[in-house]
Image (cartoon, rainbow, N blue to C red; front, side, top):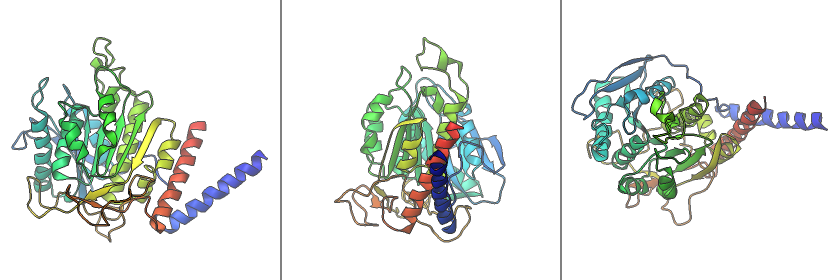
Length: 382
């Protein structure tokens, strides 16, 4: 009976693989591993953006590549985000990592403005950068700065690692977001206020996926060692662990690939079936929602094509090619009463098709998610 059951399971997997491959999609890879692109890391010169320095990581290929700004948290620096930047760059993204001024007295609003200005600066000065495809990532207080920036420039993808709020400004900005957003939380401790953010976590207008990384400390949202993280007097919980950092890298990379490159295999890794099947996550939740509507050219401080939208989604190679449907990281259909497709509401959001929508593309993403989940279960057992 066990042999027969195994044969049936593998026959089902083979069928799903064949169908998804026929449609040009592939079974989701492990995005926690380094990607295929080589890259060059250089210093980010202090300038008009408001950053006091930082790093710029550019893939060595021809491009064009989407832009990501990765923002550090309280008392940290670009060094604490450089690991994420180089990981994202290995999948074909130009990544800027600012050093925020302020040290132990950060100005979160100014830091958000720095993120905005840096997007425009990279778009202007890096020939390989594609200003029509923008993503933002931030940890802790950097997640707050990222949220404030995202509420203004409305990028195509947002990733927040255990974000914290200050005086409610994050809650207000987060509730207005229509950018597709992924939030990964750590266990609560003295170094975060994750429970506070969790309370308003589902309040975004747009597509949202959120989950707890099992056993994670606040410092797992960084990609550099900090001795203070494990100091009992500080109370961050524990030092960062490579295994939990890999979980952060896996889902953040999948989110950026799905949203900024139209990668349906990556989108399947964020479907509810895959998230709930992963024992390294808990409390996974997804919802659909309106996407950001295009903004008139030249509005605001970002380049005219940097947002809001979803930035133009192209084929998974990152080159030109015909647009493909944007796969929402959710397994639910839009709530009744939402505006019709492409209709903007007063928030500047427009409804976009999600995984929960009907159609062949949605079916294929769902099947890829099932295959991804089975593969993840088998890898843990092995």
